[in-house]
Image (tube, rainbow, N blue to C red; front, side, top):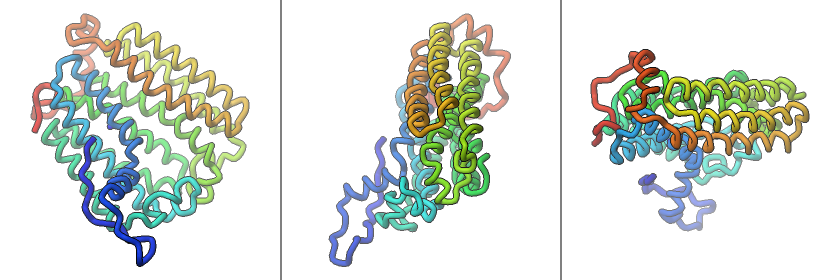
Length: 338
């Protein structure tokens, strides 16, 4: 991955005689800049990572602070991303109505809101969870704003960096609950990393002309026939089958999740194969929708079939795979909080 307090500054009116926008309009514009729906998915993956890491031993207050801190960090990163990309956003049909290109917000407001939200989120994660969680959040903000965003006009490999950014939130949740990154956390991150590639390739294919117009070197914008785009999407979808199975093999989730993940993965792959055979916008849209449905269903299956800390499978699999990334302060799942 919400309650946010928006700044009280108002926007410049569309014409000199217009009245200032009411506070509700400011909040709405702030949330639009923050890409609230995208941030909600980030919070969801963080919460799932927290629950899987805690294995039933957690307190609601700890989870609340982690969710709030993650939301504000995601808000801040999204706002700063739009601040940097506002000139290119004006060239794209899909993004020209966003607050900055449309003049509903100023660059100064976006800078203050983005920096303020990011710092508030980091502070909440450091105080309410632990320094490892805050450090991972800082890493995602830096990668998203300072690496992924400037790479988009330069190379199609920016998608890989963006996938790394999206892979970190469930690891943040795990770190908040345990104070470390076990093998299960890395597998969770791997699942999110692999999932994002076909998800974004489908989206970029649908808007490839828009991306090209704005000067973004996304793969579908430079791979005009789309053969490489479609085949890569299918390859990554098929890779989800072993990566999701690994979560059960290390004892984080059970056999029910294993079966559900394979059924979901095969259904996802069938839609990916249709995109390979017919590279059209409707086929890309079906793949994009399938990716949106796949992830929450997979996350629900994970949590529904997670093993508790007393699981014999967990005891057999986990002790030998803990990664040495441990912090001294207590995890949120074990009583840490503000």
